[in-house]
Image (cartoon, rainbow, N blue to C red; front, side, top):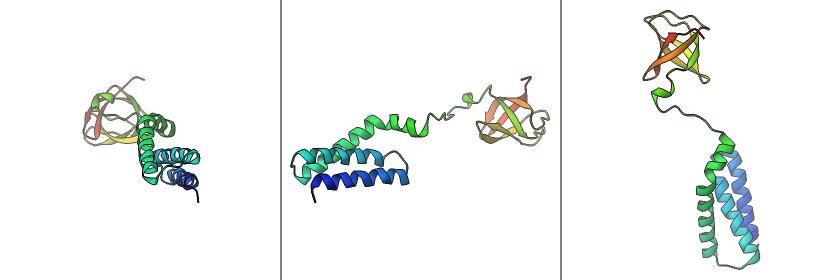
Length: 143
């Protein structure tokens, strides 16, 4: 069997593996195998050089294209890193909040524990005024 055919089969297996175990990494090793397949189709180079080309082309494609492919496959997901990112957001109450007990609010499709100094009923809109660990302090709003 010719070297280019072996590398082509390896590339196809890596592409299929990416579909089974998505992580947007195996795709780039598949690109590296495809590059080696194309090169070995036109030239006869030793296995050592083939492996070097495979490693270099895989890592070059990984580091140059990963962010572009990752945004394509996963989209731009906003991750809240600071408590300031929550402040001022208007959200809906999902479980009644009593003055001395936790209720629930929904923020970006996720339920969060919430506290307030006043009773707030399900369905009311509240504004986030403070974050304490995984609990958000809220207040009624006119929105």
